[in-house]
Length: 69
Image (cartoon, rainbow, N blue to C red):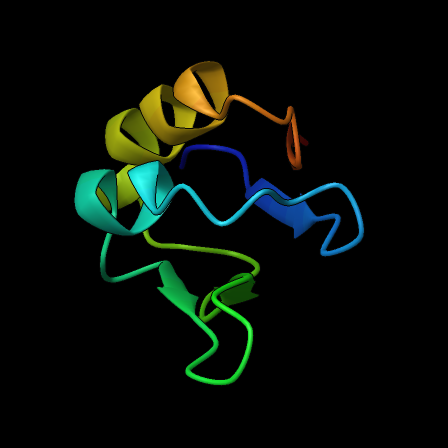
């Protein structure tokens, strides 16, 4: 059994670039009102882990935190 990947977002830091949504649309979304990140899956399935890590790495505002347990 693999560990657990946990994702957290900081909406106050988010700049609304949408990179995360394009990279991992099953995990991230954007608020229609302000364009800021919405977290759809705080503990995504393992199949999404690579995309989530890439989204966090490419976030221009560093608004995505990924931790593994």
